[in-house]
Amino acid sequence: MLRSLSIRNVVLIDKLDIDFKPQLSVLTGETGAGKSILLDSLGLVLGNRAETSLIRQGEDKLSVTAIFDTDADNHQLQEILNENELDCTDEIMIKRTLGRDGKGKIFFNDQPISAKLLKEIGRCLVEIHGQFDNQGLLNQSTHRGVLDAFGAYPQLETAVKNAWEEYQNASKARRLAEADIAKAKEEEDNLRHWVNELETIKPQKGEEAELSARRQELMHAEKIIENLNYAYSAISQENDVASSLRHAQSAIDKANRYVDGRYDEVYAALDRALIEVSDALERIESASADINLNSTEQENIDNRLFALKDLARKHGVAVDDLADTLAEFKRRLSAIELGEGGISALREQEQQKRQAYLEAAANINKARIAAAQKLDGLIMKELPPLKMEKAKFITMIERLPENSWGETGFDNVYFTVSTNPNSPQGPLGKIASGGELARFMLALKVNLAQSSNVCTMIFDEVDTGIGGATAQAVGERLARLGQGVQVLVVTHSPQVAACGSNHYKVEKSTVDNTTTTTVRELNGNERKEEIARMLAGEVISDEARAAAQVLIGNAV
Image (cartoon, rainbow, N blue to C red; front, side, top):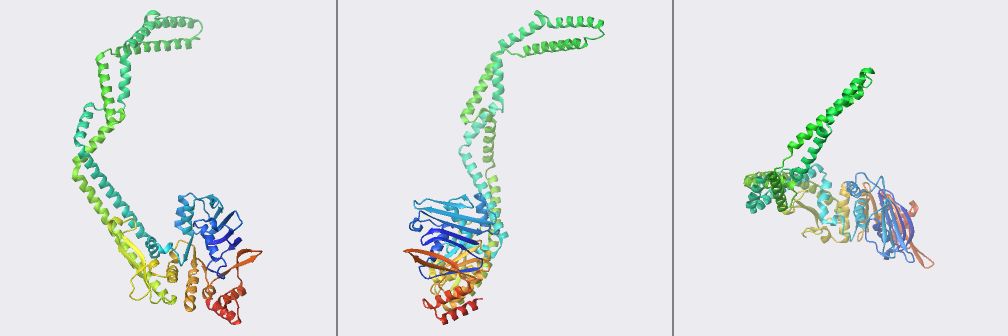
């Protein structure tokens, strides 16, 4: 709920801090006192467009700060905050400033945000209803969601959403397969040629590196053999390293006899060296024997490398990806060979998913019809006391064309009214007048309060054009609505004002040619005096005070 509102330099308001309370709060005051300025100020922190004309004369900038207590059940708000990585505990503070140059800043709990995001957040916090309200329930696209929230069947909503996703996935798989086959048929001859060409050469992953290494070896075979022979000769012929090691080992053995084996480690080291030398000679001899001076092999390798690179360029891939390319071409040919048999299976699966979706959509359709009948009945009960006994409210549920189906089902839901007998049903905003519209909204909100996401509702002059018992009925319903959510009402009706749990008076005063609007909460006697003023006008009589006391007493 809205806990407090701090306003600085907005039109007639110099400095104003208001603490709000739960239930129904009424705001009263003479015409022109500045009640609309309060709503304009609140609108700024809810995302309404900021105009420099709102800045108080003589000041450089305005600022408005609102503090809200959050509601854990406001899932829509939580989703928006999570998506935008905004931190929020049990309190939300929104501050907005605007300078004469048109530049402004917006902060959400000290984190800067955009005006667009602020508007999304604001819709989740407060609903404002007035004679010219064009948001909320006047937006026909919201009616299905409103009815679903009222009906409270989340399992059916989840089921139709999941069924729609599965149907769409199956449809997409079928379309892709059909497109794949159509495309493949167009290039079937090419595919067969490419497969034949690639299968002839049989490309292997890593083959290019292996062939390149072998080619390098063949190109330098003579130099490699020359160096290997020299190494072999250096060890075995010129210096005969092995013979020298054996002679050394024999000498150490003889010396060892005189020192009781003191040189055993030297002897062992020479033994290891002899073994390594012998191994090296064998390896050199083997390596030399493996070197192939066959020019034909080198030519074959050159030809294969050229062929592989040529195919790689042709298909726009790396040589190592030719094997994968061959596999892809074979898959596309298989798709052609699969033909209508494979497509038929996908079509059958799609049809099954479509049927499952239709069943889920039919189930939620039945639930919506039942919820609509219940809601219509409740609204109709509210209308006679609101002096609209001839009006009729009907929730229309129509089946959408298939191209408009979606994850919410195939229903188009919208609220309609007629205000006179035999007059046609039509949309809320087009059929009802300003005062009638406000009362329709009130009747709706009284019954939808428990399913609403917002925690604060504001009604601006919902009592326009009514009085007496009708105004009393409006006040009673606003008070009842206030039992579930915080309600703020700007009113000129004493009957409505008498129903408030809290009463704020908006006043305007002029000092030294400077006009300022203030707001203060009224106590018991002040409240009675204000309602008496609303009844009697400028001169308050004892009879007006007595009537005010009666109104307050009847509202308790």
